[in-house]
Image 1 (cartoon, rainbow, N blue to C red):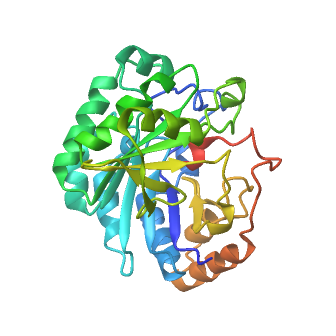
Image 2 (image 1 turned 180 degrees about the horizontal axis):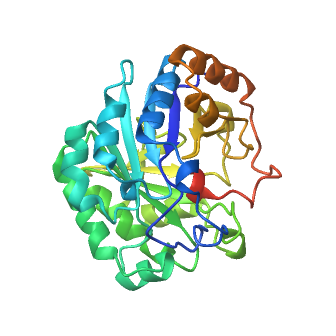
Length: 318
């Protein structure tokens, strides 16, 4: 499998405190000198593209709290050979930035939104900011992005009663709603016992309301998501089955965190840190050679990896 997709974490900080994430329990945030500068991020991204990457996605933490993120988007989009620049965000800051991000070259946006109810949003995220996120969804739909997706982590007993409502958004709006199986990967999420609701049950509940799901194959730009729609829908649905399915063999991505650590797999330790090479003046060709060597050691880490339960998604962006 060719490695052509980089998930690029811009910060380990977040403006929410979700029940399955641990931004406030890591001990400390990275110090300023540990973080890559905009120029270093752009140089690293250029080397990844030279090594074969065609798509870059900004992640976090929450990438939209990164200072001058619109300027950074423009720098990355200008890299010759990059085909797509995408963003995953919790949506809190999106309403104010959606138009500028699109003008800067961001092609697609994924918005993490696990509930449509204000009180449940506060329970899940620790903050009463649902209205801001929903405004960001609306602004994104008007901004002209190629694709707008909602990422919904379904948790039994918490938000599973909203499955039909989320499916209904794909009927009403030209967006893709992606239902993600709960996967306990870190300190906090492993405490949510009984939260898993398998994809098969989520589909069954949707079909009970909307009728048969029509397969759409692999969702374009959707990674491991399997695509479906219902008759007459303006948008579509995707299902990511990290627990009941297996898609590691088709993985085409690597990750770099905001300090320059490169992870061949979500379940692998970092195998290289580019920060030292960037700060010692390594050129694009040298960095690209390093990155190609990292691609060679990417392997199929299994879901039962020893890393499971110890991954801080707030640092490496999922």
